[in-house]
Image 1 (cartoon, rainbow, N blue to C red):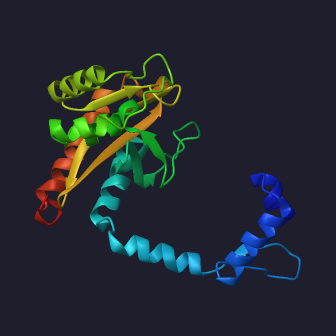
Image 2: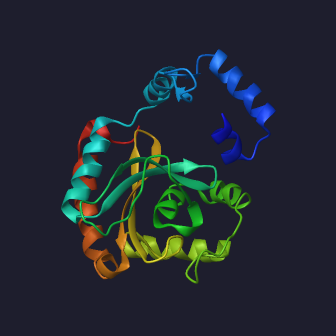
Length: 225
């Protein structure tokens, strides 16, 4: 209890009452007397309910794993969550120096190739609604800092055939993303890794991704509804 209080900066009395209430509801328990609190299995049950309510098709997991294997870099599937790209699936690279990412990670939609690949699937009017909620923060000297810059990047990506980024949010990270429409869901797939290894390889990476996605979409069960 003291560790929870100190870590969160809460008064001891408030922490005691709050943790006690959570424990009474069955979300925490003490494996042994005064041995500290531990999450109960109720969290796992809740997580399964959430996952089962709108699961990613198994084929999407296989696609991410295939792209990660063929590119040798961390691969993720993202969706729109407010003004962020939220990772629904992550397959990390096997290489020692790699992009470390996890399911649930959020990345600013304007400062990432995956975010712009999601934006590209929205109409101009839908993007305007999203833009009104944006807070432009300069993470690096390559971070897009205006709506005009984002729109220009989207146009360039359409002409190039893929979205790309370089250290816009995370230093020394290069990424390539493509749209991934799945059963009316506007998803995107991203491959990212250290700029020293991935920056010059972005066209080749995009070609690998494009081929895998085309085969994925050619399967009728994976096409947009």
